[in-house]
Length: 124
Image (cartoon, rainbow, N blue to C red; front, side):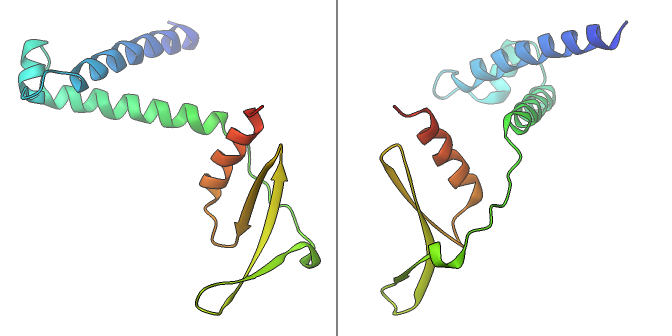
């Protein structure tokens, strides 16, 4: 069996497992995972194995889609200083894109900034 055939078989299996997981997660209120598994002919251990594999595949797919993050040097004169309520100064950068203003500081979460920029990129 070629590696391409193996990959296709794995993707089909993962899609099937993902459908089972969605089905289990939308099971009737009051029905346990163990009861759902018994009704569908799989063990609880096998269900959680499939759940882990599907989650791992989803995370890998997301990571492949994410662009490589690059650090962009910013001249200090472009940074703005804002006084916080406690009297401390916080240095940050205001970014204006498509009518949106984003204030970025050293404590801004990079994953959050990345998600916000994706939303702004697709905004009209």
